[in-house]
Length: 104
Image (cartoon, rainbow, N blue to C red; front, side, top):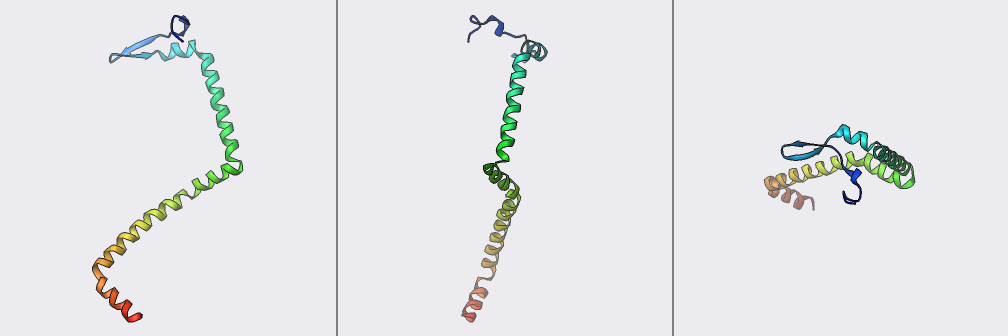
């Protein structure tokens, strides 16, 4: 929609560092009904989201979220154990090989 089609679609602005910024107080007053509609839509989305979390599908996402800390720690510790293993293998490879030969 262009300004010629709807001349009421304008709002007061302020210039800041050569940028045109809306005057928020004037915008709130002139578009109060739009704010109410947006707030109602956000509240509806919140209720739908909470409803989804309480369903069977939502419980899967909730379980994934709750287990994310354990998964993160497992990934970090596995990386740490790999670094330690590589260091030990580079330092004691011959001794480990002889121990394996003796045990077998």
